[in-house]
Image (tube, rainbow, N blue to C red; front, side, top):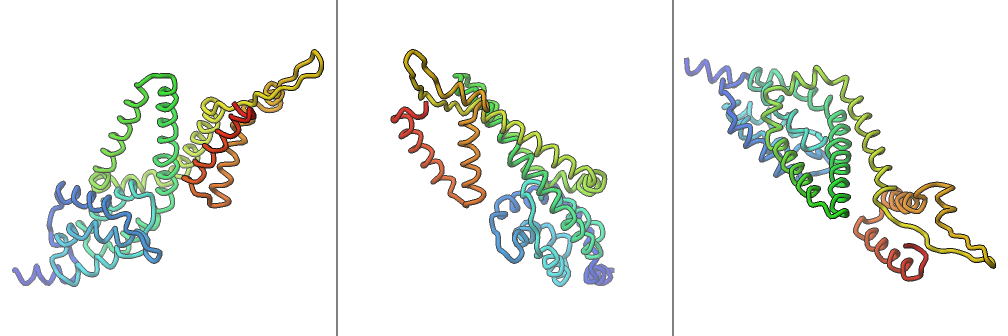
Length: 277
């Protein structure tokens, strides 16, 4: 009977091991700690293999099966790291159930969800939520209200909790999630992008308080520049500053640190010269 089990495992069948929460959390932790291991051939592939190797070792007790499973994951993979754990959890569930027979399905799942997850994760988790909540916290801080800092800290804790349990969630619900909502992911990405851009656009006018104090006098008539600019386009100077910064970052590959220093120096010089206020 023992030899029959070894033969089954050698043919790519799972060992029958039931994956535990400890296994999933260990894999999740290894993924978060290793995702920065990036190369231009497989990108996140090495991190995937490293993260799943302990749990795969328990699923495949035969050495050759284990090596084949690792090689299957040591392929090109690249998406938003936080949401990727959901897919990795689903892959563990598929291999626990079907063994190497699920190898192609696992690759199809990973490849098919890379793009949508990257879009949702980058626009929603990496851009929209931090921008909105960070801006609210900063604006409240400007007004002298410390609640904004508490809101930001609570958001960080919530995101950390999600990151620490994403692989476990994917193990339980990942396959159903990507199959039932796959068609809706592009719509969610587009909506998140529009909302994020709208919020950023509003913040440019409300947070960046830069005006032009220059005025001209013609006899008894005085003309100020700022009211004239506001009639052409409200918050023209903040919009121009933001547009210039965006252009330098995206088109000229300017360094964020260098750009911040340039803005600080120009602001000091323009303020001292009376050009901006």
